[in-house]
Length: 332
Image 1 (tube, rainbow, N blue to C red):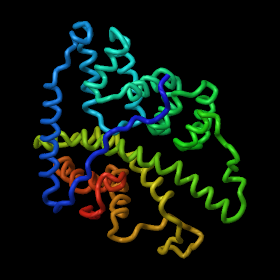
Image 2 (cartoon, rainbow, N blue to C red; image 1 turned 60 degrees about the horizontal axis):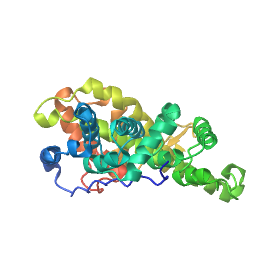
Image 3 (tube, one colour; image 1 turned 120 degrees about the vertical axis):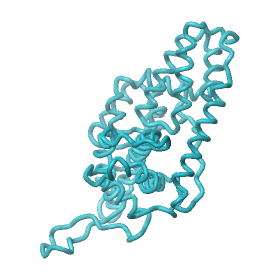
Image 4 (tube, rainbow, N blue to C red; image 1 turned 90 degrees about the vertical axis):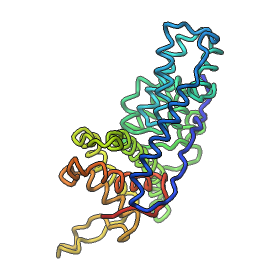
C-alpha cells in the first residue's frame, strides 16, 4: 500500500485583476485557450502497443485519461471516481510497470499519486457515502486509506458524530500518535478553553467550507459552457445543484467569521443574529452572492443568468477560496 502523503496537484494561476467589463471576454478567451491546450494534449498519442496494452481495452484507458484532463482540484466524490477508474485501468494493464508509464504520461501521476487514488477506492469505498457527505479533503483520505480497519472505523465514527479531524490529526491516528497529551478542548476551563474550542472550530470548519465552495464553483463553471457559446445557462439544473449548498455555505461562513449582535430593528434585545461584514468589502460580496444563490427567487432570468454568474458569482467565490485577489468584486 502506498504512503499517506497527499498528491501534489498543480494549483491554478491567479488571474490578473481587470476592469469588470472585460471579465466575460477574458473568460471566453481563457476557455478557448483551455480547449486548445486540451486538444494539443489529446494529440499527444500514447504508444499503447509499446506498453503491451491490448487494443480492446484502449477505450477504457482513454476514458480515464479524459477524466483526469477534465478535472482540476478534485472534490471528495471525484477522488473516489478517479480511484475507481484507475483501479479498472490497472487491472487491464499487462504489468505494474506499464500502468505506471501510462499513468505518468496520460494523467501526470507519479507512482505514489496513482496509488493514493486506488487506495482510496479499494480501502475506503465502504465508507464512501459518509466521507463524501463530510467533504473529507483528498489529503486526509490518502492518509486514511493506509490505516488499519479499526482506525478507519474510528475516524468514520467521529465524522458521523459531527467531529471534523484535521489532516494532521488523521495522520497522527494512522501513525499511532493520536491524542498524545492533547486534552479535549471541551475539558479546558476559562479563556484558554474558549480559545481552544474556537481553534478547533476553525481547523475543522474552514476546510469543509472551502471544499463546499470549490464544489459549487466547479458546478458553475461547467454550467457556463453554453453561455460562452452564446446560449442560455440551464437555470433549473443549476438551481438544484446550488441552492441548498449556498444556504449552508453562508451559514458556515457567518458561523466561522462573525460574532452576534442584537437586532437593531427590534426592541427585543435578546434577539440576536450574526453581525454583517464591512460594507463594500469582498467578504460582504461573498455573503451576498451566497444569499442570492440560496434563494431561487433571487436569481436573474435565464437571459441574464450567464452574465450574472460571470461578473458577480464566480469572482466572489474565487475570492472566497483564494483563487482570485480581492479587487473587482461586485456587491450589487
